[in-house]
Length: 263
Image 1 (tube, rainbow, N blue to C red):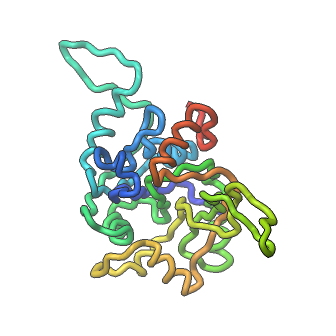
Image 2: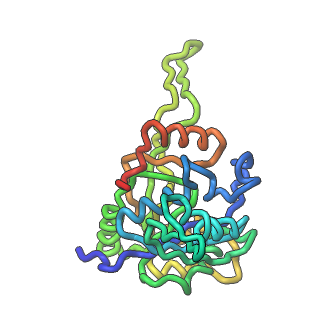
Image 3: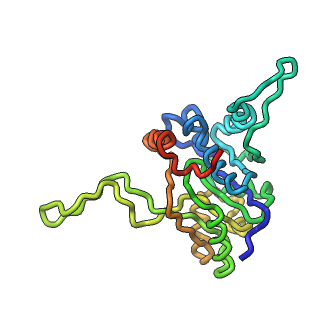
């Protein structure tokens, strides 16, 4: 099995409004909501960078200029540095990332945002994920799975799936009596958590005159038998609501399971 020698480009969806986290997204775009001292977008990029994927294409939309400003002006200052006041210069960030900022529209849906990134992809095969979820996923194993499925079945896309925990306790009844009560058990169904690997053929499924969610595109790919999956058995958590925000920030202080990088 031959994996690509060149690290793949990573597209991160950054343009949505994040209305379910409006306590924070009224002020900043969702990918810039803080997780510890850095935005959640930084955490996602650190994960990919751990596997030598350092070229990121960011699909800008709602408050996109704040994402640009963060990486150009704020991020370099979040470290110790010295400066000569007579000739002030911005410090060089520790993270050696190449960033491509793509203006994809304020109201565009994710399939259109992806299509608008097409001409900016340099790696052929590429990866895509959402700008609001962190995981301790092994990107190398994900790529190996995609390559295996492509060779065996000719798939053009692999999504990462995981079994989330229910937000509610599950009650089972027998007659008039409660038989069992499970506090927020792990669900039996799998969900798409992002961290996708795509071939360039994916763009054959996106029509320029349509504006749909990328999940609709993936359904079309699945209908043709060309959508694979990788089961992630470890940690995954999205920042979808204020409770998610609070929970993730508590985890960052106590046990950040998604922090697989060392610096």
